Image 1 (cartoon, protein in one colour):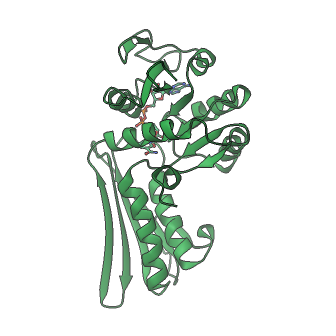
Image 2: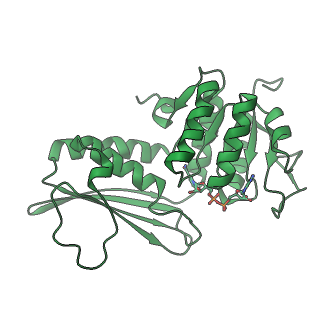
Length: 265
Ligand code: NAD
């Protein structure tokens, strides 16, 4: 905490799209204050001053020591090594990096044993509400209504399908009462045969500077329901992540998500 009660935040990847958005969003808030900014040793913004008086460095240990919580929107490798150090130091975390494997998730689970962490594939209020609506719709309509998800993102996005699309697909599988891995279909190519009942399809489109769009279609006989979310600014993710940062400090160790932060569980 600072003297005025703001939670001190270390932002990772301050030269990235989301890192910059987090720093900008913090400027308008009194509940958090950027106290450290850490990027990779060859990042373009190293040595620059951000958030008033914070010099961007590459010493993660020093950055975590100067903060009550860190906010991580970087790369899978950076997120895993930050979580390993945070476990050693017991630092709470807000993690938005997507594309993590089961082995990477296990590293986050180790951190969650000693510190509270919020992990979300999407920090926007709208998408978290959408996930609840998708689960309800899939439950109400059942697996005879085919569920297909299409996501669109900017051309620089590395992972596919998006973490948000996977969260929405998981919500649909939950609504159908099945394990997602048993029914998933990521893209179609070639002679894939007729669509089996209960399959959940996810398709990734990449282009331009699209921040993030997701449409979940539920196809019945003679009708179609579409539930969509369009992000037009990264501010929504940054604001959600900072809200999570202020919320998570002081919580018992464990893994939380945005439904916990928003009080929607
Ligand atoms: P980006 O490529 O613009 O930025 C990544 C940043 O991480 C860069 O500044 C890079 O220098 C930094 N970095 C790399 N290695 C590092 C290290 N070892 N230590 C510190 N910093 C390091 O990417 P982006 O568009 O900002 O997205 C980052 C991640 O966040 C992606 O996985 C993306 O899918 C995810 N994302 C999540 C949400 C959400 O709401 N959860 C929203 C948008 C993006």
